[in-house]
Length: 154
Image (cartoon, rainbow, N blue to C red; front, top):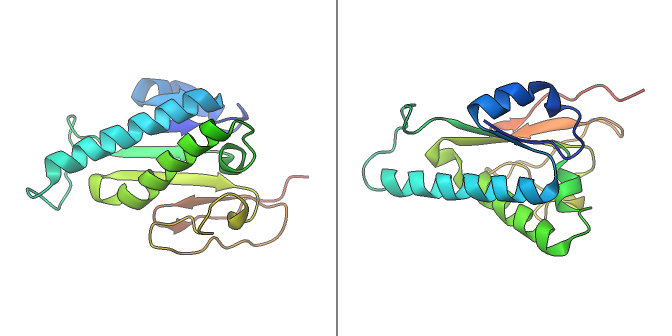
């Protein structure tokens, strides 16, 4: 389980779990490295599976991978370092389009409309558009579609 938490708030509560079973990163440079490592691991797994199997069985050698990214807009649209922003976007694009087949799932937390930080305006590898309930609400989007909207902050 990998967690990207640039605000050091929401996912920090589970840091002990992330550190024990995966990784936790908070600064954008560390997040980029963590995501790029996840892509390399995912592609290596896909290479091992290619032509041999289509079904995935969880094992200690090939664990199910979960990638949580909080405040994805900060990392992809509002990140001032252009090269770092591009690295993060490339890693997320690869994870979201290729992860399903190699047992890599992702959840992205967004507060702003998708088109401001995701070029295609989608958050799902199936092309399902992000749906917004109202301004001021955030929502987690996953490899299986949108989650439940969180109440607006007061």
